[in-house]
Image 1 (tube, rainbow, N blue to C red):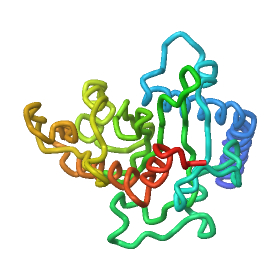
Image 2: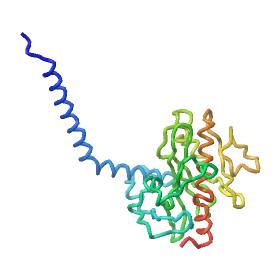
Image 3: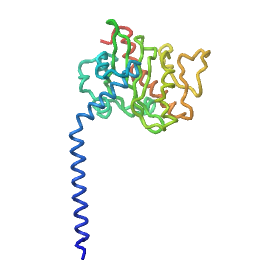
Image 4: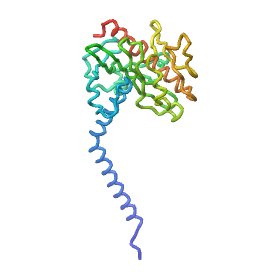
Length: 256
C-alpha cells in the first residue's frame, strides 16, 4: 500500500521551494559585487562608445582612465564639488524631491516627470585641452524610457556620437536606435541654431542639399513615435532645463 499522502506531498514541495529560494537568494548575495562591477563596465563601455573611443581588445576600465567624471549643478550650469561624483546616483536623485524638480506638462518634453538638480558629465582632454563632452540623456519613446549618452566636441555644439544603453523599444523598429548605421549619421550634426536647440529627427532621409541638413537626422523607419521621442529627449537635455546653461558657461570659461 502506498504511504504517499497529500500532506507529505505538500511538505516535500514546500521544503523544495525553501531550498531553491535559499540557493537563489544566496547566489544573488554572493554575486552582487560581480553584478555591480559588470554594470559599471557596461556603463563605461557605452560612454566610450558614444565618444567613438571604445576599442576591442583593451580592458574597458583601462580605456576609461582617459575620462574625467564631474558633477554639474543643472540649475546654475556650473561644476560643483558639493556632490561626490563617485557615489552620486542620478536615477535615485531624480526620485528624491529634495534633489530634483517636478516638471510641468509644458516643461516635460522628454516625458520623465522629474529632473534631478545635479548630473554627472564625462570629459575627455587631449594635450591638456578639453576635447569631448559626454552627457547622459533619457526620455520616453514608444514603449520605454531610453537611457543613453550624447557626445559633443569642445564647442558644445557639434555632435561626436550618440548611443543608448538601455531601452525597451520594438526590435527592428524603434530598436533600430542601436543600429550602427543609424548611429553613424550623428557625428558632425549641429545642436544649436543661435540659442535654440535645432537638432531633430525628420520623417525619412535628410536631403544633404537642405539648408537645415546640419540639424537634421534620418528618422527611424516604421518608428514614428520612437523617432519623436528621441527628438524630444535630445532637445530637452540640450535645452534650458538640461545642459544648455552648462555648455554656455563652459564655452565662456565660466563653468567653474
